[in-house]
Length: 178
Image (tube, rainbow, N blue to C red):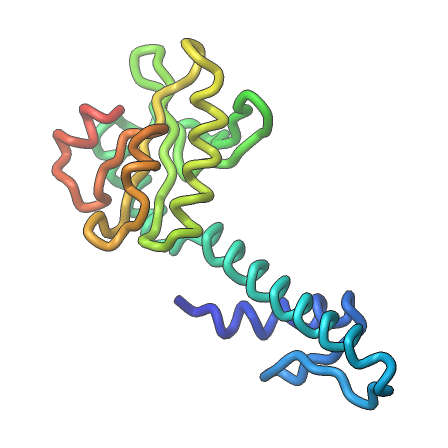
C-alpha cells in the first residue's frame, strides 16, 4: 500500500511529540534510567501506535489520482462537464466533508467517493456518507465507487449508507447511480 514511505515521513514528528527517537527504521529511546523505564516503554509504545494510526489514516484518505481521474472522466462522459460541480465539499449533519466528485443532474445532487479495498478507506467513506445520510430527506444521493469490489471489506456496512458501484462498471450502472 505504500505505507512505508508515509510512515517514514510521519513518524519523526510523532516521535518528537512523545519525546522519543526515530531513526527511519524504528521508534526507540536511549539512555533511560531504570526508574524511568516504564514511562519510556509507554512513550515508545504510544508513539509507535500513533505513528501507525496516522499512517493508516493517511493511506485511507489518499485515493490514487488515477482512480479519481477515471471517475471524473466517466462522469463527464456520461453527464457532461456542466453537470460536474467544481465544489466537492459538502456539509453533513455534523461535519463538512470533501468528496471525490459531486454531480448535479436534473436538480438532484449526487456525491461520489472512491473507496479502495482497505478497511480504513471503507471506514472513512462510511463515516462521511453516514453524516450526509443523517440529513434525512434533504440528503443528496451517495455513491461509493469501489476500486475492487471483491477485495473490499465491510461492504454490508457501506451499503447501509451509500450505493456501491465498481469503478469499472458499465455506463448504465453509473447512470442509474446518479
